[in-house]
Length: 283
Image (tube, rainbow, N blue to C red):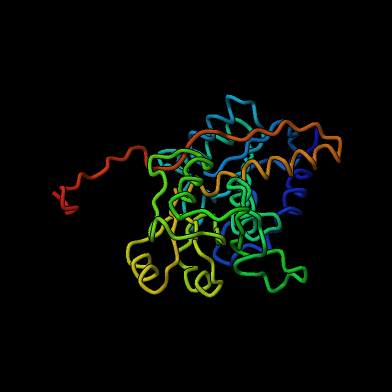
């Protein structure tokens, strides 16, 4: 079995920490570099449910997309949400490693996995990485559909292919508008509206879209917007990362057992649809 330090070196080669945004907090949160690793659990969120799942699985390493500590802290006391997770991991000899914005812009990265889940053909990055001479790394992806669909049909495709959440899929725009090209970005994406419009795509699929940016975006252009749950747009990366880690394990003869968590850690748990009157106005 490999040591944790060897596995981390392999993960850092896939998603170099230096490519993370300056505000980000990636890398190893806890773990003994000399500890042996046999099982790895991949998940989006480093929450207590995932820590408990790793214990049940007998995993020695959790790899998550979201950081546990994005901002500084002065305590890891167990009475706090994050401190309890750290205590659980250390007591059970489980390491935690984070690949966040360095996985977002990787080739392949989070948005490649999202495009793959929707059977979209990736053309190029939405926001290219200026340091990449190949032009393949960057934030988000510009994609093409094999056959044109209406916006409503494309939204239905997202609802069918992405993991189910309480939010489901929302979309804004003309339901009958024809969609041939799509921009996708895993995670929160309404800061990308300007570059999406400049790309000239028919639709944009992302998460966490807010009222005012959506209102402005739909007023300024015929762009169709598809809003999925944050967790659902990033979960496909876990499967991609598992495949990459399996390949590394085979290449090194490590015989790692790599698992992807199916636990839904999206924080929203229920949804009730508002009822409209016959005129379409709220009751």
